Image 1 (cartoon, rainbow, N blue to C red):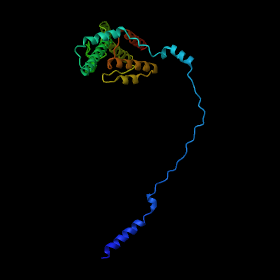
Image 2 (image 1 turned 90 degrees about the vertical axis):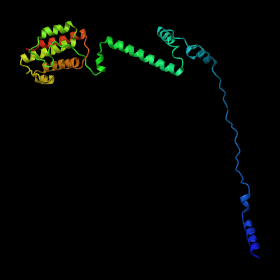
Image 3 (image 1 turned 30 degrees about the vertical axis):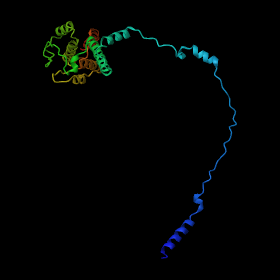
Image 4 (image 1 turned 180 degrees about the vertical axis):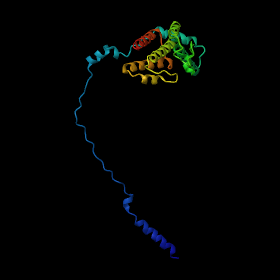
Length: 241
């Protein structure tokens, strides 16, 4: 019978043991703000400088930008008006404009390359075919009438072929003078090494490099450039004894 009153007594004593401070409010520490005693210095805009800036064109923002009314802009304005009825949607119109610009640029590049004599076969991986008046595979320098064949190449403006023939003629002259030992299977660099004279070797090396760029590299050569190349060969052949 005394069991429940004892429990109640213990519960009451537990409540009495809780500190009273836990329920008291926490005091906050406050600090008093100090008044700003610094002196303020009022500044004013210089009206004379402002008027000076107003007179300068770079600071006059109320001016309207002049319209570029050049012939180039007039052409493009007319050009796009021709296709304004075709490209009605924004997206399709932008794409259509880019396509037209790409085609126009490609046409300009084609015309420029055509006038400069660029061989378009280089883009297909095929070299330009040249009518050779003799069997180029053999290149027997003892069987070619160089004077006749060179004149034919010059008359037909086939300057690359003329350079090739002049190079072979120089090989023949060197061979006839016992300066090299010509053989069909030898390379051009071999003939350069066979020359014992340093000056002659240097000049023939330059002619060899020039010939390989023009013939194997398919470099375009016009009449004016060919005259300079021909003079170089004539000077070299004159020095062969």
